[in-house]
Image (cartoon, rainbow, N blue to C red):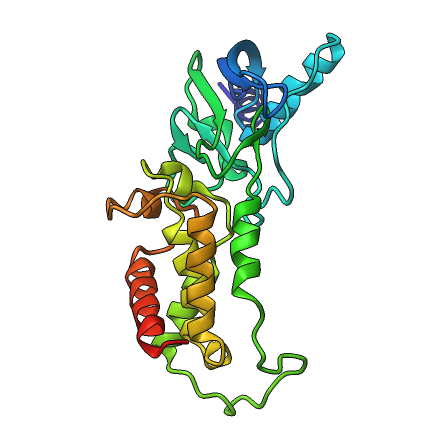
Length: 269
């Protein structure tokens, strides 16, 4: 005759199932400097925790390389919270990897299969030259932003809530555009390395709001001119940029950019 104590003991003795660690084959792009030739180098990891983020997995690999007296892999990162846009990696041919609206740092290793082979390389675009290994120079984006300049509207203190009435749908569209983190996935995913989604997000944000009206025409003309100077390609409306964007920026912004540009030309500003 079994007692409740026996039943409890049998439950306590039941084996626990730990999460199985992953064995992975990594082909990582190594390039000593911008002027050096690069190549894929193969590494094996056999105890990757499924709870690691993708960047934590690279941290583990680097720790082992350092312990073996080898040079660690250079890659960009900052907040590791999907906000800064620094973690610009191409994973198995896709900027930021296979998860929609997700940055590299927010991908976890449980999304990969045991024994899987992963190719890791930098974003590919002439306007984003490789600095070292997985790091690219995205200074072109900074120069486009700088060309847009500043707004002259006072922004030093909180205005009265009803001083600048903005329709709800307009405010939502402006904030959706402002969500762009400037990671460059749109450029890396485009066969022409176009920066139209990035530029259109930055132009749309201020073109939709009252604070951006004073420099509206000058801003779009200057930013498009700088975009062309940087060597980005033309948009062919295939929407790969939207699919690769970790913040889901809509290609509708590109249509708005074109309208804003034509308007500015017509105004003669």
